[in-house]
Image 1 (cartoon, rainbow, N blue to C red):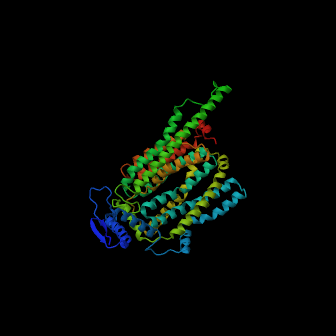
Image 2: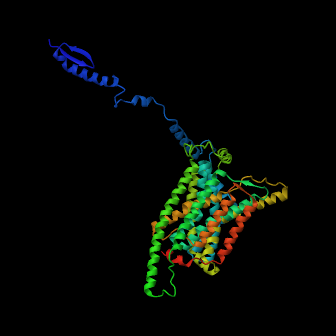
Length: 502
């Protein structure tokens, strides 16, 4: 009898016959595998397994909080826990959201006027009236989306939608290569949102109260954002002004000197476009980082979660959004906004096509048309709503002797609109011009830049103490009127025309 011995993991095993050798080998391999798992590994071993320890560790709380915030946002966006709003009910709410919707009948008439080539002034007037209710519908859509997105993201959505009309007009002007008019319109939109709208708001809102308050945390950063956006226009203007004048004179009238001047102008255009595109990228980075800071400040673990350090006013608005019922279904609202953007884009294009004739027939300068008249299109809806509201307040007071108590909080949303237009839409248009081969740059008319810098510093001074009153509102309105008066006689900086030719 032959014995087969084997030592496995320090254990002695014997088998009585050779016939059991194969089974002994199989048992030895099985025992080896078991011992690999069961035998302890010294703490000094660098290859020790941590699988069991990893499985036994609890899931990090930050991960759970982030997952819960995402699930909560998803449920809120779907309207979970709210009364369900049907499709027909949503359409009815949209149609009855404002009395300005009566003007929507002008849209098909404006399109007919364009395709049948009616008089350009008629087409311009119809398109102008059509833009008024569309602007209001975008604002209403932003208000409804805030119910589903929350106060933080809802505010960003609302600001973006309020700038859609101006941004669409700007994109169409860029495609039509109306770069001079585009630059004037950009400055005009920012001036309107910095001076005219806040001035009217502070004047009327502070008429019956000594001071109105602003959210101090946002005011401080808004000053910096607004200043850097305006100063970005000052640098190319200073660069261009420091160059040797390239305008032909009586002394330099020969063909060789004229060719040299044209060559220098081409070189300057290349340099200005290069610096403008680099600065546009920086402005976009600044705006994105500012949104990250606003919506996810240090200490807040998730942008979708509640901010424990939010202001009292922010918390109050968030609470109102949670307990109030929306009027429109979220999916209907999204589809409605997409359709409205398409209608508004076509209407804005017909409006732009009739601009040249209107300017020539009315003998308006391109500067005044872009700086004053076109931006009024975006304000007309808000202005009409505000006028209607104050007429209603006045009628209620005279008829029933029931004055509405003044609000202690000033509305400064339009300042956020101007910041987005300066730091996002303006550099976006520069980069879009780069992509489409249009020489759109940050070299604006020096008169426009000076007007914008003056408006920026005036607004910063007015809001520096986070308080406003009706006198400061009057000052903002007065400065806007001053700019409009001076612009009426201004014909533009002629030496920039050669740099804006497509």
